[in-house]
Amino acid sequence: MGRCMKLAVLNQKGGVGKTTVSVNLAYGFAHEGKRTLLVDLDPQAHSTIIYSSPPKKPEATVKDLLLSKTSDIRKAIIPASVNGQPVNGLFLIASNIHLAITAEQIIASTHREKLLHNHFKKIEKDFDFIVMDCPPTLNVLTVNAIYTADLILIPTTYSVNALDGIADLFKSVSDVKESEDFAFLIVRNGYDARNKDSNRFIEENLEPYRQYVLKTIIRRIEAINQAPMNREPIFTFDPTSRGTEDFQALTSELIAYA
Ligand SMILES: Nc1ncnc2c1ncn2[C@@H]1O[C@H](COP(=O)(O)OP(=O)(O)O)[C@@H](O)[C@H]1O
Ligand SMILES: [Mg+2]
Image (tube, rainbow, N blue to C red; front, side, top):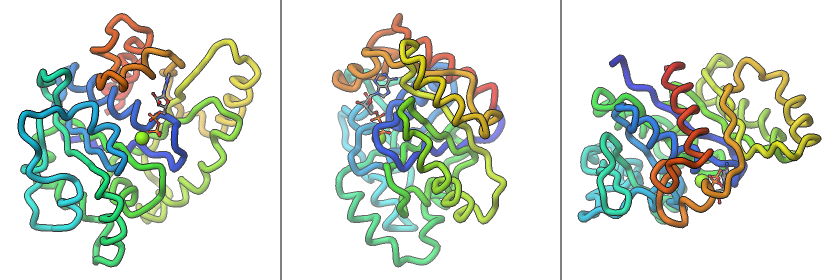
């Protein structure tokens, strides 16, 4: 296996599927035998809730990594588990609500955008994929994810204003990367075949980005919505669901891309 690929799942809009994509893609990668680390960068900790029912609490969370350059990232990595069962090959760096305050604290520190990047350097050889679930803001947490990411993965929905903020998003990424030339892909989420007009509207708006739009479309499926209520990824919650099918396809497409 080649080098580690770091993905930032990014969109400053809330509710577009960042967490859904992060949680399920991370599971998909691990299921395909890829050593995967899911990093929860959202103080709301929705990804963390899915995968952490650990017998032992982590000695550190993402907050500690951001607050201290000398904090040991290995102490923050915990095995992911679902229904008390460890998920082979899947690991988690947990978030919690305190991360919101951390974000404010590190705004003034030097090299603040490189904090996560420098921690990752120590463990990249242990993983094939690092998936970062970003908060719905363009703050210092997101900037850390952007800085270290090899690929920006942008989930977008089929709502009328879905692409409104995309220019701002690209501007932020190119500011952080200090380059216009960065790798990004767009994943369409929440497709409903019945909504012909809005589907056509979104496809027309995506036209300028066509070469960056992934082939896989994640459909709007109730099981995808229910799985987190049971603290599960779609893969275990309903293995025969069309949602599992879609996330399997997305996993394969991204593994091929990597
Ligand atoms: N393809 C989908 N089908 C059904 N529900 C979805 C789908 N994608 C996301 N959802 C639901 O929409 C809500 C927002 O998704 P989430 O992943 O939390 O967005 P974000 O992390 O961008 O805020 C969640 O309740 C989630 O379960
Ligand atoms: Mg989220």
